[in-house]
Image (cartoon, rainbow, N blue to C red; front, side, top):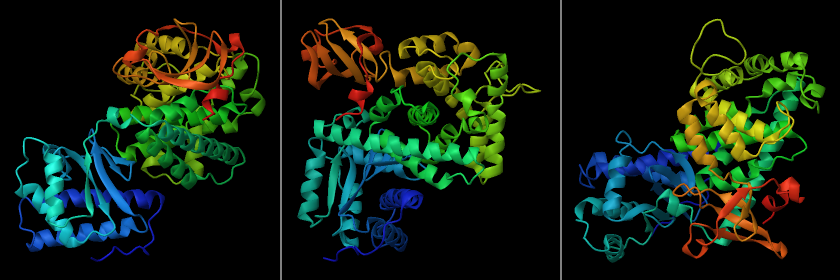
Length: 482
């Protein structure tokens, strides 16, 4: 049996993601071709050779490659790639066939041969799925035919994929922290470069956004939890990072493609780049703004668009970022700033960034208002202004992202315990997942993770959201811990 060449270098960053996508869709096209052609047909063999070449080049020094689809979301090695599982690529028909055999993806080992691949592909169409245990019986058949380098992955939903072990959860949170602080560092470099009229590190920013997208596709709660921390000293950098996280989470829920998510992430992270042109004492002013201060602050959208136009290569993504920098304070009723000579709708990314920018700013209490507002009250305020200031559909979707009890919120329970919301529950928003950090006996030595939707916790109810400052609690202490 011939081993795949392990000396081939893997592509990196954007090239790696594109290579993964090309390989996955080449597999879908190959499986679809097997329905039309015999496996020794020239047309089929050409597709088989193409997929095998792409697989070999991508696999490199990996011990295997997984390709799976969860609720129409495509993953390669657990990295989110695209939502475009449709007839054009051949994936929709293939995924339906996989479902008939009760599996949602495959793991390909590095001992794969073209012969094994062709046996597996042909079998998908030559066998009739049995009524009982179709996946198990397909596995037995593959083993009988000597196909030992392809494993079948059970079908999953996104809800299923979120059910993870405590150790996996700790690893996800550690990974999220690494990405979050790398994003903070990148934003600091971006704004500092803009202020000093230096080269802005767009390539590094793209890499960070790809990491955020991958993290959100795996588990968005870990990053949203970090975005809920509002006591960072350098608020402007944290704000841009938070807006990027919230915007990408909302974009993911909208079903945007990988390319669209990257463009949205760039637009979100650069939305306030114009503030680098404003005096630092204005940005950091502890008192409320007077009219002169507001006049200066309202210039930052124009400064932002000009900065992007002058310092960055204007491809389609950066052109959208420039539009978002200019438009994110313009409301649907055409109020806001800057004032335009004619009424025209803002673009989708600007409407997304407008919502998440307002949410983070109001709940932080740093620039536009000086006193933070509890996240649930912020959401009520945004909903009250929905018809005037925000896209109603996007705002309702964002409420689903944030939840009735937002991630990172401190709550009081009916048994007098305190807890921090760690994950929302879309099926029942009143029964989220959280960490118990204190009870009648005092602060816990280690937070206890509980899921209020589980039957054993039905006697525990949330009484109300409380402000941690009143109890001398600093939530970042818990959120940044394992």
